[in-house]
Image 1: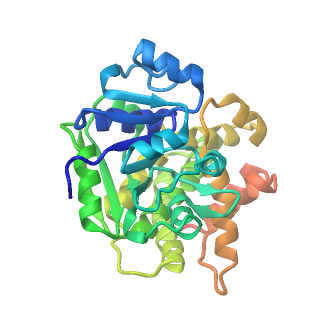
Image 2: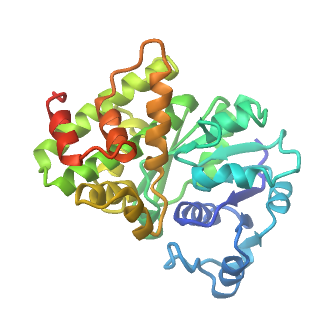
Length: 333
């Protein structure tokens, strides 16, 4: 693949900021779409994001920041979207330029509420991007640890191995190790599902359950994930690989996990609304829970998903978390 491919990142949250940092390790220039003009101006002048990963300093000569999504999309060959799933549809609707020949990369770990599709599925099915031009970035990798340059791991999933290797090469560094995979659908669903299981882990912690229960919860979660993904897209996969199990564990256990934080607040008695107001970041798992529950239950024979069902009932049917997890505990093994 030609080495002169140009990259653009869309989004200005912590994950988008982390991806820009990773790309700046390997590229002379990175295009960056930042929706808010004040944030864009601040990054240009102060050389760091004012709201997310503010410790990361950028060389302004490497950045071409735009508040025009079409300008950024036109300028680059590889478009990496790291906009929260709840807001992605509205932003993509602003994009009027033809991107059919470009490589589209989803760093979005959730479902688009308007369509019930994951970002990669949305670009392929709705925007008609060929499958071998759609890639997904999987973990385990927290934005906060990228900022600290702690050793982290990424999996780039794409049907085209050359495209996956191209993207992986631009994200690799002394603190980022990358590998490639061809299970695009499985990797994207795993990235969505692990946020639901992280909410469950947070709820259990908030309720006062200990490490023993957490370990049982996570071991059941990976088996539940395997059953769910097999229903969505059956193929031979090793569920203990880092893109599945590794990402699940870090999201379920890490103090950096916003979904675990959200669940912890719910377990401690916060309402969904109050928890969302208090958090400054989007907990993707809230939206993913409803979509995953509905997708699964539309199947002729749904996968057995007691953890997803429990979280769904708590978040959307206001079931008492203590009662829900008491019932869930009897379904785990």
